[in-house]
Length: 175
Image (cartoon, rainbow, N blue to C red; front, side, top):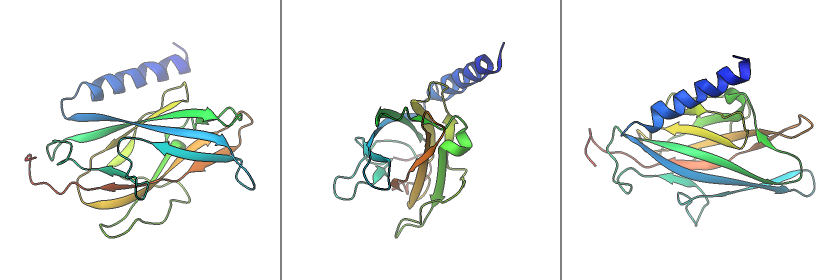
């Protein structure tokens, strides 16, 4: 089996194992990329049922979603590229998703370089380049800022830096 075939098989196994878990809740997040103006060649927008209409943050709340404390979210980011640049998620997961964890008062600064956390991380980066699946344990009340990495058809890198908030503070396995 070639390297790409092995990667696809590995990703399928990861997705099957995680999506088959009873404690995972899948949520969809669409990233729309359009041609930018000025110094930014790409403008990004985010759409999801998780998006707070007042501030644009993605909000994860296990109590509202009737989840147990031990449950977790699987966030499926899908890229809709209307930029004309041939964007794809970075093929290497360590470049596709960076995260900075904050406190429960305000969001942290955007990650400017690779940074990771054991509670919010990539679980699948399919070879197609139009999806990225991230696990969010949502264990404590806190803001976090993440950076999604993209590459265009010329190899140039582009980043998008949304903000999210974990609101779970439950006890044990209670709702």
